[in-house]
Length: 487
Image (cartoon, rainbow, N blue to C red; front, side, top):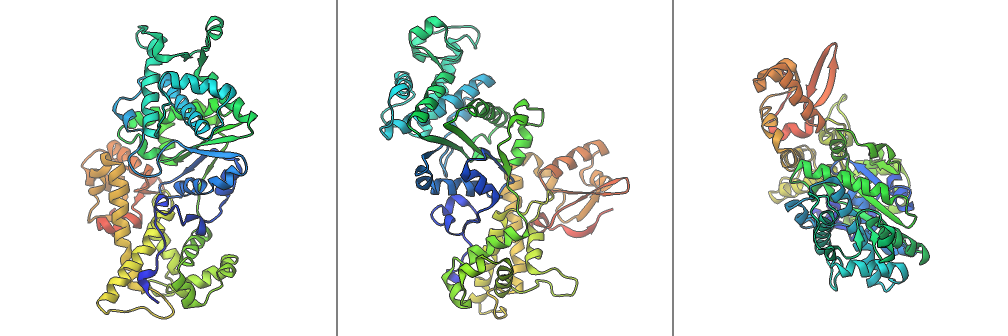
Protein backbone atom coordinates (compact mmCIF):
# COMPACT_ATOMS: atom_id res chain seq x y z
CA UNK A 1 0.00 0.00 0.00
CA UNK A 2 1.25 3.48 -0.91
CA UNK A 3 0.95 5.67 2.18
CA UNK A 4 1.43 8.78 0.00
CA UNK A 5 -2.11 8.32 -1.31
CA UNK A 6 -3.73 7.98 2.12
CA UNK A 7 -5.40 10.91 3.89
CA UNK A 8 -7.96 11.53 6.61
CA UNK A 9 -9.16 14.65 4.81
CA UNK A 10 -8.84 18.31 5.71
CA UNK A 11 -9.43 19.43 9.27
CA UNK A 12 -11.09 22.57 7.84
CA UNK A 13 -14.55 21.78 6.44
CA UNK A 14 -14.52 24.66 3.94
CA UNK A 15 -11.50 23.08 2.21
CA UNK A 16 -13.30 19.83 1.42
CA UNK A 17 -16.75 21.02 0.34
CA UNK A 18 -16.81 18.63 -2.63
CA UNK A 19 -16.05 15.48 -0.62
CA UNK A 20 -17.49 16.18 2.84
CA UNK A 21 -20.90 14.65 2.12
CA UNK A 22 -19.33 11.30 1.22
CA UNK A 23 -18.15 10.62 4.76
CA UNK A 24 -20.10 13.05 6.91
CA UNK A 25 -21.65 11.50 10.01
CA UNK A 26 -25.36 12.25 10.20
CA UNK A 27 -25.51 13.36 13.81
CA UNK A 28 -28.61 14.54 15.67
CA UNK A 29 -27.45 18.12 15.16
CA UNK A 30 -27.38 17.61 11.39
CA UNK A 31 -30.73 15.83 11.24
CA UNK A 32 -32.46 18.57 13.24
CA UNK A 33 -30.81 21.32 11.22
CA UNK A 34 -31.76 19.71 7.91
CA UNK A 35 -35.38 19.28 9.04
CA UNK A 36 -35.54 22.96 9.99
CA UNK A 37 -35.98 22.27 13.71
CA UNK A 38 -32.77 24.13 14.62
CA UNK A 39 -31.77 27.73 13.89
CA UNK A 40 -28.75 28.25 16.14
CA UNK A 41 -25.82 25.81 16.23
CA UNK A 42 -23.31 26.19 19.06
CA UNK A 43 -20.02 24.33 19.39
CA UNK A 44 -16.39 24.72 20.41
CA UNK A 45 -13.71 25.65 17.87
CA UNK A 46 -13.21 22.71 15.54
CA UNK A 47 -16.37 20.91 16.73
CA UNK A 48 -17.92 20.84 13.26
CA UNK A 49 -20.16 23.91 12.93
CA UNK A 50 -18.69 24.82 9.56
CA UNK A 51 -19.04 21.20 8.47
CA UNK A 52 -22.80 21.48 9.01
CA UNK A 53 -22.84 24.81 7.18
CA UNK A 54 -20.78 23.41 4.28
CA UNK A 55 -22.96 20.31 4.04
CA UNK A 56 -26.12 22.44 3.97
CA UNK A 57 -24.72 24.34 0.99
CA UNK A 58 -23.82 21.04 -0.66
CA UNK A 59 -27.46 19.95 -0.24
CA UNK A 60 -28.90 23.19 -1.69
CA UNK A 61 -30.39 21.47 -4.74
CA UNK A 62 -31.91 18.76 -2.58
CA UNK A 63 -33.38 21.40 -0.25
CA UNK A 64 -34.64 23.45 -3.19
CA UNK A 65 -36.68 20.45 -4.28
CA UNK A 66 -38.40 20.89 -0.91
CA UNK A 67 -38.99 24.60 -1.76
CA UNK A 68 -36.18 25.83 0.51
CA UNK A 69 -33.49 28.09 -0.92
CA UNK A 70 -30.27 28.94 0.91
CA UNK A 71 -28.56 32.31 1.08
CA UNK A 72 -25.13 32.67 2.66
CA UNK A 73 -24.48 35.94 4.52
CA UNK A 74 -20.71 35.38 4.34
CA UNK A 75 -18.19 33.94 1.88
CA UNK A 76 -17.17 30.38 2.85
CA UNK A 77 -13.47 31.29 2.65
CA UNK A 78 -11.21 34.29 2.17
CA UNK A 79 -11.53 37.84 3.45
CA UNK A 80 -14.72 38.50 5.38
CA UNK A 81 -17.42 40.57 3.66
CA UNK A 82 -17.80 42.52 6.90
CA UNK A 83 -14.37 44.17 6.62
CA UNK A 84 -15.95 47.58 5.86
CA UNK A 85 -18.09 47.30 8.98
CA UNK A 86 -14.93 46.84 11.04
CA UNK A 87 -13.51 50.10 9.72
CA UNK A 88 -16.54 52.25 10.58
CA UNK A 89 -18.96 50.24 12.75
CA UNK A 90 -22.48 51.32 13.75
CA UNK A 91 -22.42 53.49 16.86
CA UNK A 92 -25.67 52.36 18.51
CA UNK A 93 -27.34 48.98 18.82
CA UNK A 94 -30.51 49.90 16.91
CA UNK A 95 -28.33 50.86 13.95
CA UNK A 96 -26.64 47.45 13.98
CA UNK A 97 -30.00 45.63 14.20
CA UNK A 98 -31.27 47.65 11.24
CA UNK A 99 -28.07 46.90 9.32
CA UNK A 100 -28.67 43.15 9.67
CA UNK A 101 -32.30 43.47 8.60
CA UNK A 102 -31.48 45.62 5.56
CA UNK A 103 -28.77 43.15 4.57
CA UNK A 104 -31.20 40.24 4.78
CA UNK A 105 -33.72 42.19 2.65
CA UNK A 106 -30.99 42.75 0.05
CA UNK A 107 -30.04 39.06 -0.01
CA UNK A 108 -33.62 37.87 -0.46
CA UNK A 109 -34.56 40.53 -3.04
CA UNK A 110 -31.40 39.91 -5.07
CA UNK A 111 -32.18 36.17 -5.18
CA UNK A 112 -35.77 36.77 -6.24
CA UNK A 113 -34.65 39.12 -9.02
CA UNK A 114 -31.95 36.71 -10.26
CA UNK A 115 -34.44 33.84 -10.33
CA UNK A 116 -37.20 35.89 -12.00
CA UNK A 117 -39.51 35.41 -9.02
CA UNK A 118 -39.76 39.08 -8.02
CA UNK A 119 -43.34 40.26 -8.45
CA UNK A 120 -46.17 41.83 -6.45
CA UNK A 121 -45.16 43.11 -3.02
CA UNK A 122 -41.62 41.69 -3.47
CA UNK A 123 -41.21 43.98 -6.50
CA UNK A 124 -42.30 46.91 -4.34
CA UNK A 125 -39.53 46.00 -1.88
CA UNK A 126 -36.98 45.61 -4.66
CA UNK A 127 -37.97 48.96 -6.18
CA UNK A 128 -37.43 50.69 -2.84
CA UNK A 129 -34.03 49.02 -2.42
CA UNK A 130 -32.97 49.86 -5.98
CA UNK A 131 -34.18 53.45 -5.57
CA UNK A 132 -31.63 54.10 -2.79
CA UNK A 133 -28.81 52.06 -4.30
CA UNK A 134 -29.08 49.04 -1.98
CA UNK A 135 -29.42 46.74 -4.98
CA UNK A 136 -27.63 47.33 -8.27
CA UNK A 137 -27.30 45.44 -11.53
CA UNK A 138 -24.23 43.58 -10.27
CA UNK A 139 -24.12 42.70 -6.58
CA UNK A 140 -21.58 40.98 -4.36
CA UNK A 141 -21.95 40.21 -0.66
CA UNK A 142 -19.27 42.77 0.17
CA UNK A 143 -20.98 45.47 -1.91
CA UNK A 144 -24.36 44.67 -0.38
CA UNK A 145 -23.09 44.93 3.19
CA UNK A 146 -21.17 48.11 2.37
CA UNK A 147 -24.22 49.83 0.90
CA UNK A 148 -26.39 48.55 3.77
CA UNK A 149 -23.99 50.12 6.27
CA UNK A 150 -24.02 53.50 4.54
CA UNK A 151 -27.78 53.43 4.10
CA UNK A 152 -28.44 52.48 7.72
CA UNK A 153 -26.26 55.34 8.94
CA UNK A 154 -28.16 57.78 6.72
CA UNK A 155 -31.46 56.37 7.97
CA UNK A 156 -30.43 56.96 11.58
CA UNK A 157 -29.52 60.55 10.76
CA UNK A 158 -32.73 61.25 8.86
CA UNK A 159 -34.81 60.05 11.80
CA UNK A 160 -32.84 62.10 14.30
CA UNK A 161 -30.89 59.35 16.07
CA UNK A 162 -27.61 61.23 15.84
CA UNK A 163 -28.03 64.64 17.40
CA UNK A 164 -31.45 65.26 15.90
CA UNK A 165 -29.98 66.62 12.66
CA UNK A 166 -32.20 65.78 9.68
CA UNK A 167 -30.79 65.63 6.16
CA UNK A 168 -32.41 65.32 2.76
CA UNK A 169 -34.91 62.45 3.01
CA UNK A 170 -34.18 61.41 -0.56
CA UNK A 171 -31.07 59.55 0.59
CA UNK A 172 -33.28 56.95 2.25
CA UNK A 173 -36.01 56.87 -0.38
CA UNK A 174 -39.28 55.62 1.03
CA UNK A 175 -37.78 53.47 3.78
CA UNK A 176 -38.13 54.42 7.44
CA UNK A 177 -36.76 53.09 10.70
CA UNK A 178 -39.95 53.58 12.71
CA UNK A 179 -43.41 52.48 11.63
CA UNK A 180 -44.48 55.12 9.05
CA UNK A 181 -47.34 57.50 9.87
CA UNK A 182 -50.65 57.18 8.02
CA UNK A 183 -49.64 60.10 5.83
CA UNK A 184 -46.31 58.45 5.02
CA UNK A 185 -48.06 55.16 4.22
CA UNK A 186 -50.28 56.93 1.69
CA UNK A 187 -47.09 58.24 0.06
CA UNK A 188 -45.67 54.70 -0.16
CA UNK A 189 -43.30 54.68 2.81
CA UNK A 190 -42.41 51.39 4.54
CA UNK A 191 -40.33 50.57 7.60
CA UNK A 192 -37.47 48.08 7.45
CA UNK A 193 -39.69 45.58 9.29
CA UNK A 194 -42.44 46.20 6.71
CA UNK A 195 -40.01 45.23 3.95
CA UNK A 196 -39.23 41.92 5.66
CA UNK A 197 -42.92 41.27 6.20
CA UNK A 198 -43.69 41.96 2.54
CA UNK A 199 -40.93 39.59 1.45
CA UNK A 200 -42.27 36.94 3.83
CA UNK A 201 -45.79 37.32 2.37
CA UNK A 202 -44.43 36.97 -1.16
CA UNK A 203 -42.43 33.85 -0.29
CA UNK A 204 -45.53 32.26 1.23
CA UNK A 205 -47.46 33.15 -1.93
CA UNK A 206 -44.89 31.51 -4.24
CA UNK A 207 -44.46 28.60 -1.79
CA UNK A 208 -40.79 29.16 -1.09
CA UNK A 209 -38.83 29.23 2.18
CA UNK A 210 -35.59 31.14 2.63
CA UNK A 211 -32.79 30.08 4.99
CA UNK A 212 -30.12 32.75 5.56
CA UNK A 213 -26.89 31.13 6.80
CA UNK A 214 -24.54 33.07 9.09
CA UNK A 215 -21.20 31.31 9.57
CA UNK A 216 -17.57 32.43 10.14
CA UNK A 217 -18.77 34.91 12.76
CA UNK A 218 -15.59 34.30 14.77
CA UNK A 219 -13.56 36.05 12.03
CA UNK A 220 -16.15 38.59 10.85
CA UNK A 221 -15.72 40.93 13.83
CA UNK A 222 -12.54 39.64 15.46
CA UNK A 223 -10.62 42.93 15.55
CA UNK A 224 -12.50 44.25 18.56
CA UNK A 225 -14.24 42.51 21.45
CA UNK A 226 -16.67 45.42 21.72
CA UNK A 227 -17.50 45.30 18.00
CA UNK A 228 -17.98 41.54 18.19
CA UNK A 229 -20.32 41.87 21.14
CA UNK A 230 -22.39 44.63 19.54
CA UNK A 231 -22.59 42.93 16.14
CA UNK A 232 -23.59 39.51 17.45
CA UNK A 233 -26.04 40.76 20.05
CA UNK A 234 -27.67 42.81 17.27
CA UNK A 235 -27.75 39.72 15.04
CA UNK A 236 -29.63 37.76 17.68
CA UNK A 237 -32.07 40.65 18.21
CA UNK A 238 -32.70 40.72 14.46
CA UNK A 239 -33.08 36.92 14.56
CA UNK A 240 -35.71 37.20 17.29
CA UNK A 241 -37.72 39.74 15.26
CA UNK A 242 -37.50 37.62 12.08
CA UNK A 243 -38.36 34.39 13.92
CA UNK A 244 -42.08 35.18 13.64
CA UNK A 245 -41.97 35.00 9.85
CA UNK A 246 -43.12 31.71 8.39
CA UNK A 247 -40.99 31.73 5.24
CA UNK A 248 -37.73 33.36 6.43
CA UNK A 249 -35.28 31.66 8.80
CA UNK A 250 -31.88 32.88 9.99
CA UNK A 251 -29.45 30.04 10.74
CA UNK A 252 -26.54 31.02 12.99
CA UNK A 253 -23.38 28.92 13.51
CA UNK A 254 -21.47 30.24 16.51
CA UNK A 255 -18.73 29.13 18.86
CA UNK A 256 -20.05 28.58 22.37
CA UNK A 257 -17.16 30.51 23.96
CA UNK A 258 -18.11 33.58 21.88
CA UNK A 259 -21.76 33.17 22.90
CA UNK A 260 -20.68 33.04 26.56
CA UNK A 261 -18.59 36.15 26.05
CA UNK A 262 -21.33 38.27 24.45
CA UNK A 263 -23.92 37.23 27.04
CA UNK A 264 -21.66 37.55 30.09
CA UNK A 265 -23.17 40.87 31.13
CA UNK A 266 -26.72 39.61 30.64
CA UNK A 267 -28.75 39.34 27.46
CA UNK A 268 -32.53 39.28 27.65
CA UNK A 269 -32.97 37.68 24.23
CA UNK A 270 -30.92 34.63 25.27
CA UNK A 271 -33.79 33.03 27.17
CA UNK A 272 -36.01 33.26 24.08
CA UNK A 273 -33.63 31.39 21.79
CA UNK A 274 -35.10 27.89 21.93
CA UNK A 275 -34.37 26.41 18.48
CA UNK A 276 -30.72 25.79 19.26
CA UNK A 277 -28.39 22.84 19.64
CA UNK A 278 -24.83 22.39 20.90
CA UNK A 279 -22.54 20.04 18.98
CA UNK A 280 -21.00 17.42 21.21
CA UNK A 281 -18.82 14.42 20.45
CA UNK A 282 -18.31 11.15 22.30
CA UNK A 283 -15.91 8.26 21.71
CA UNK A 284 -18.27 6.41 19.36
CA UNK A 285 -18.88 9.50 17.19
CA UNK A 286 -15.18 10.27 16.96
CA UNK A 287 -14.19 6.70 16.15
CA UNK A 288 -16.86 6.64 13.45
CA UNK A 289 -15.44 9.90 12.08
CA UNK A 290 -11.92 8.50 11.70
CA UNK A 291 -13.11 5.16 10.33
CA UNK A 292 -15.43 6.85 7.80
CA UNK A 293 -12.59 9.02 6.54
CA UNK A 294 -10.19 6.06 6.38
CA UNK A 295 -12.69 4.14 4.26
CA UNK A 296 -12.58 6.90 1.63
CA UNK A 297 -9.08 5.69 0.75
CA UNK A 298 -9.16 3.00 -1.95
CA UNK A 299 -5.71 1.74 -0.95
CA UNK A 300 -6.90 1.02 2.59
CA UNK A 301 -10.08 -0.70 1.40
CA UNK A 302 -8.05 -2.90 -0.96
CA UNK A 303 -5.33 -3.66 1.60
CA UNK A 304 -7.81 -5.05 4.12
CA UNK A 305 -10.37 -6.34 1.57
CA UNK A 306 -13.18 -4.44 3.26
CA UNK A 307 -16.94 -4.30 2.84
CA UNK A 308 -17.39 -0.57 3.50
CA UNK A 309 -21.15 -0.62 4.09
CA UNK A 310 -20.86 -3.55 6.48
CA UNK A 311 -18.23 -1.79 8.60
CA UNK A 312 -20.11 1.50 8.72
CA UNK A 313 -23.26 -0.25 9.90
CA UNK A 314 -21.64 -1.92 12.91
CA UNK A 315 -19.70 -0.13 15.67
CA UNK A 316 -17.86 -3.27 16.78
CA UNK A 317 -16.57 -3.82 13.24
CA UNK A 318 -15.44 -0.19 13.15
CA UNK A 319 -13.47 -0.73 16.33
CA UNK A 320 -11.89 -3.93 14.95
CA UNK A 321 -10.99 -2.23 11.68
CA UNK A 322 -9.42 0.70 13.54
CA UNK A 323 -7.08 -1.69 15.36
CA UNK A 324 -6.01 -3.24 12.09
CA UNK A 325 -4.83 0.19 10.93
CA UNK A 326 -3.26 1.17 14.25
CA UNK A 327 -1.45 -0.68 17.04
CA UNK A 328 -3.54 -1.65 20.05
CA UNK A 329 -1.43 0.51 22.38
CA UNK A 330 1.05 3.35 21.97
CA UNK A 331 2.65 2.84 25.37
CA UNK A 332 2.60 -0.92 25.86
CA UNK A 333 1.59 -2.16 29.29
CA UNK A 334 -1.20 -3.70 31.32
CA UNK A 335 -2.30 -0.38 32.81
CA UNK A 336 -1.80 1.66 29.62
CA UNK A 337 -4.78 2.90 27.62
CA UNK A 338 -5.62 1.71 24.11
CA UNK A 339 -4.48 3.85 21.19
CA UNK A 340 -7.73 5.62 20.40
CA UNK A 341 -8.22 6.76 24.01
CA UNK A 342 -4.51 7.63 24.21
CA UNK A 343 -4.91 10.05 21.26
CA UNK A 344 -8.18 11.51 22.56
CA UNK A 345 -6.46 12.27 25.85
CA UNK A 346 -3.79 14.23 23.98
CA UNK A 347 -6.20 16.50 22.10
CA UNK A 348 -8.68 17.09 24.95
CA UNK A 349 -8.60 20.59 26.45
CA UNK A 350 -9.40 21.77 29.97
CA UNK A 351 -13.08 22.16 29.09
CA UNK A 352 -13.22 18.46 28.16
CA UNK A 353 -13.57 19.29 24.45
CA UNK A 354 -12.16 16.77 21.94
CA UNK A 355 -12.55 18.68 18.66
CA UNK A 356 -12.75 16.66 15.43
CA UNK A 357 -10.48 19.26 13.82
CA UNK A 358 -7.57 18.34 16.13
CA UNK A 359 -8.35 14.64 15.78
CA UNK A 360 -8.15 14.77 11.97
CA UNK A 361 -4.95 16.83 12.23
CA UNK A 362 -3.47 14.21 14.56
CA UNK A 363 -4.04 11.30 12.17
CA UNK A 364 -2.77 13.22 9.15
CA UNK A 365 0.34 14.23 11.09
CA UNK A 366 0.89 10.57 12.02
CA UNK A 367 0.82 9.64 8.31
CA UNK A 368 3.23 12.47 7.51
CA UNK A 369 5.73 11.36 10.15
CA UNK A 370 5.51 7.74 9.01
CA UNK A 371 6.30 8.78 5.44
CA UNK A 372 9.39 10.65 6.68
CA UNK A 373 10.55 7.50 8.48
CA UNK A 374 10.05 5.45 5.32
CA UNK A 375 12.05 8.01 3.32
CA UNK A 376 15.10 7.14 5.42
CA UNK A 377 14.30 3.39 5.30
CA UNK A 378 13.34 3.32 8.97
CA UNK A 379 10.23 1.17 8.84
CA UNK A 380 8.94 0.17 12.29
CA UNK A 381 5.37 -0.54 11.23
CA UNK A 382 4.03 -3.87 12.49
CA UNK A 383 1.59 -5.75 10.28
CA UNK A 384 -1.28 -5.28 9.71
CA UNK A 385 -0.88 -1.61 10.83
CA UNK A 386 -0.26 1.31 8.48
CA UNK A 387 1.78 3.40 10.97
CA UNK A 388 4.13 2.73 13.87
CA UNK A 389 3.79 3.52 17.56
CA UNK A 390 6.60 6.06 17.34
CA UNK A 391 4.84 8.05 14.59
CA UNK A 392 1.65 8.18 16.67
CA UNK A 393 3.60 9.30 19.72
CA UNK A 394 5.60 11.95 17.88
CA UNK A 395 2.57 13.47 16.12
CA UNK A 396 1.49 15.05 19.38
CA UNK A 397 4.07 17.84 19.18
CA UNK A 398 2.84 19.35 15.90
CA UNK A 399 -0.80 19.16 17.03
CA UNK A 400 0.13 20.83 20.32
CA UNK A 401 2.10 23.54 18.49
CA UNK A 402 -0.81 24.30 16.15
CA UNK A 403 -3.28 24.43 19.02
CA UNK A 404 -1.10 26.82 21.05
CA UNK A 405 -0.11 29.13 18.20
CA UNK A 406 -3.26 29.16 16.06
CA UNK A 407 -5.87 28.99 18.79
CA UNK A 408 -4.53 30.26 22.11
CA UNK A 409 -2.08 32.91 20.93
CA UNK A 410 -4.02 33.92 17.82
CA UNK A 411 -7.34 34.35 19.58
CA UNK A 412 -6.29 35.38 23.07
CA UNK A 413 -3.13 37.50 22.61
CA UNK A 414 -3.82 39.26 25.91
CA UNK A 415 -3.24 35.93 27.70
CA UNK A 416 -0.08 34.94 25.81
CA UNK A 417 2.38 36.14 28.45
CA UNK A 418 0.48 34.29 31.21
CA UNK A 419 0.63 31.06 29.18
CA UNK A 420 4.30 31.38 28.28
CA UNK A 421 5.10 31.61 32.01
CA UNK A 422 4.50 27.85 32.18
CA UNK A 423 7.21 26.90 29.68
CA UNK A 424 9.44 24.18 31.20
CA UNK A 425 7.28 24.11 34.35
CA UNK A 426 5.22 21.31 35.87
CA UNK A 427 1.64 20.54 34.80
CA UNK A 428 -0.29 20.85 38.10
CA UNK A 429 -0.55 23.99 40.20
CA UNK A 430 -2.35 25.51 43.14
CA UNK A 431 -2.87 29.19 43.95
CA UNK A 432 0.46 29.49 45.78
CA UNK A 433 2.52 28.19 42.84
CA UNK A 434 0.61 30.48 40.46
CA UNK A 435 1.45 33.47 42.65
CA UNK A 436 5.13 32.48 42.51
CA UNK A 437 5.17 31.96 38.73
CA UNK A 438 3.44 35.25 37.93
CA UNK A 439 4.81 37.27 40.86
CA UNK A 440 1.36 38.56 41.84
CA UNK A 441 -0.95 38.34 44.86
CA UNK A 442 -3.59 35.63 45.25
CA UNK A 443 -6.49 37.76 43.95
CA UNK A 444 -4.68 38.61 40.72
CA UNK A 445 -3.44 35.03 40.33
CA UNK A 446 -6.97 33.69 40.73
CA UNK A 447 -8.29 36.17 38.19
CA UNK A 448 -5.66 35.14 35.64
CA UNK A 449 -6.19 31.44 36.38
CA UNK A 450 -9.95 31.77 35.84
CA UNK A 451 -9.34 33.49 32.49
CA UNK A 452 -7.11 30.60 31.42
CA UNK A 453 -9.63 28.05 32.67
CA UNK A 454 -12.37 29.73 30.59
CA UNK A 455 -10.42 29.10 27.40
CA UNK A 456 -9.50 25.53 28.34
CA UNK A 457 -5.80 26.06 29.13
CA UNK A 458 -6.43 24.90 32.69
CA UNK A 459 -8.49 21.96 33.82
CA UNK A 460 -10.00 22.85 37.19
CA UNK A 461 -9.84 20.33 40.02
CA UNK A 462 -10.61 20.46 43.71
CA UNK A 463 -8.72 19.01 46.65
CA UNK A 464 -10.31 19.64 50.04
CA UNK A 465 -10.59 23.42 50.25
CA UNK A 466 -7.95 24.11 47.62
CA UNK A 467 -8.44 24.79 43.91
CA UNK A 468 -6.03 22.98 41.62
CA UNK A 469 -5.12 23.93 38.05
CA UNK A 470 -3.90 21.28 35.63
CA UNK A 471 -2.55 21.93 32.12
CA UNK A 472 -4.00 19.39 29.61
CA UNK A 473 -1.71 17.27 27.42
CA UNK A 474 -2.68 19.18 24.25
CA UNK A 475 -0.75 22.23 25.50
CA UNK A 476 2.11 20.52 27.32
CA UNK A 477 4.23 19.29 24.43
CA UNK A 478 4.81 22.58 22.64
CA UNK A 479 5.41 24.44 25.92
CA UNK A 480 7.57 21.61 27.26
CA UNK A 481 5.42 21.33 30.38
CA UNK A 482 6.37 18.24 32.37
CA UNK A 483 4.20 15.80 34.25
CA UNK A 484 3.88 16.37 37.99
CA UNK A 485 2.80 18.73 40.75
CA UNK A 486 4.48 22.07 41.33
CA UNK A 487 3.11 22.31 44.89
